[in-house]
Length: 443
Ligand SMILES: *Cc1c(COP(=O)(O)O)cnc(C)c1O
Ligand SMILES: [Zn+2]
Image (cartoon, rainbow, N blue to C red; front, side):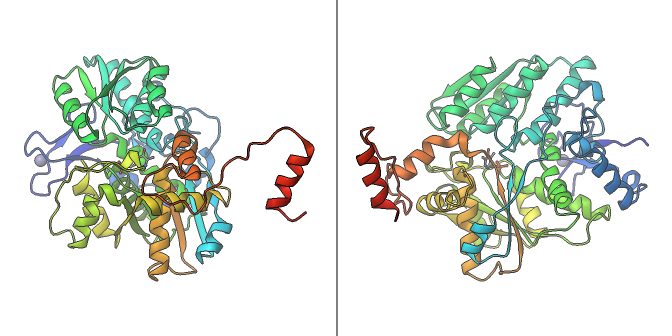
């Protein structure tokens, strides 16, 4: 069977469409965002049972490229790319962690953390980047004059772009806000040999610049305004459903910054629903840092207006965004999924992460935001004891050791750690060690 996808303008009054191999990020007719649309009639020619069987047969196997959980759903994600142009690091298939002990502490019986940070570059961004860089390789193979790929980033998109371009041997340029990404995130593009620009501005400032630079056609823009990435990220939902043995959770909570991911997760569930693989939809919750909360403010007014803001410095640096590119898609998605937007303060996010870490997780600050929001919704009675709840952990805590260190040593102004706990320094002598143990543990 021949499957095919294309770009379509999200403005219902316009509806212009474009080829996936066009170098285009916004509609040429009305300047609105684009989205990838699939030929659903063609996809529906296979039954839900046949799709499930196919996906199960491919999942985490070694037949390249289908063992990747993104390319294992190639027909639904990006059928337009030839397999020889796929640039993959075996994405997805990340652990769905049954957070039983944390769930019990929160009063939940069926609580899970989707560990999207267990990825090649340590964040969920790889899911979308594999599709984008594969399409770039496809375009280059068809003679398109692309000299480099560029992105603005809060640290994870740049790491991912750098790795995938290094795998493919395609030059890349990353625009980072100076002193606003972790050391690991800064070193990732550098070690992959990618041109790394550390700029004296914030993410929104980097975004403006990269858009200008990419106006010339020979540098391709990799930000999530480029809707190819959404197609990979939506496989988070495919994978969740598959890991729950084709069951749908009641709530999915995801931290939101530029708001591509919440849109992507909605799109994945909707597509499975439309193809008959599932028969209900979850409620989606977008969790924002109080210091960068433009969507929360809009939600408070039932999305009647949306005002970009100047994002304040937050520990959740990957979501420190005041002017999110995908806001229209996110609002459309949240309206369709009985969506909720909630916020978390610095203190709340730091303590929620530390509390979870006591139960064996290792959370990045953004996952802390989602966990803090979960606590609020449970205490308000919105989320109930028996609900099946998933928190999307967006990055690996190991990329944010500075955050973890500061949380425990109480070195963050304004944050009071309920979990402060430092290593005890002692002479290497039996009596000292023995006494130190006795002070803490009854032995
Ligand atoms: C990119 C990112 C987010 C936010 O995703 P958006 O699609 O921009 O809303 C959250 N957490 C981490 C760790 C990220 O890298
Ligand atoms: Zn248009």
